[in-house]
Image (cartoon, rainbow, N blue to C red; front, side, top):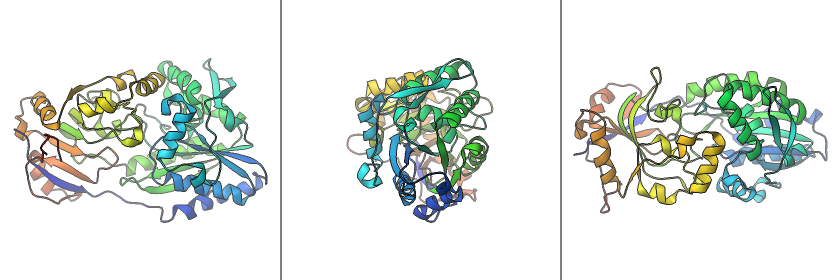
Length: 415
């Protein structure tokens, strides 16, 4: 009825920052910020909603660095509409990552208030977080990686944080509308240049992760080199990112999706659905026919944005979904289909029985099935028996189990 499975361990490149606490001040000091940031001045440090490795440690190191200069740092949530587009909700998101005023050693100032700092050439207002604008300096901190919807020299990183993150809900709404009419990178550059010139951005701190969801590089960037250096980090990020072990998949089983994993719950660069929610385009890989999602992460706080990329889901995903929060996020981003619901089933057995016959003429036991924890954690993957011979012949894969039946508990859920 179902494919037998075995476990493979993938071998990825593993560059690593050996000591994050040491690296952060070294990078910031490289920019001679002591000549710019004076004692007593305030510094707003951005904190986003993604699950970035070591993010609490990195932000604390940033705060400690500025305190060593005699400055007064504070953390400002920079996550657009996430957290239900409320100040309290965004504080909860940060707290779930261990980002609290006690742990940061400085205040967290959460507000959805913005001010208009100018007009974009494309004809819309440019919004910026009021708390950050009132600071003497702003440090933009973010991970640089492939965007889940757009391709270009600038995707998801520091430049995007200047508008989508620091623009709060007001900015995120108008910028995503503008992206419907103009190229994504054009809007990022247009708004980003205005923010850099008017909002006292003192520096950026770009983070790149390896395929094991570890901090691989930290780079401090001056405002004048934001776009150029971020583009370089993006190329590096794409080289190091984790991928599925095979590029043709009949059914992908995903244990968890969530905003801490990806803006689309599961990274579309990994599942091959960056430009079409339910099918890879001609030159896009991998080709995944069906996706089944089993659960939401606790850190997503009910935000199920991205569930619309799946064809099937466990009923608990629907039960745990905060419909209002999910809709706010999807409406703000313009990714309406990301909040649409797949077929749901009361247990894994029922879902697999429904999904496997829809992959084509391949009989269910012979289907190319992959089972992953999430799209960040791809070191070990459960693979259907159809991949056995191919896996044994790959130097980048280590087969670490024998073939066995899919394990179900007494509720017909996978173990």
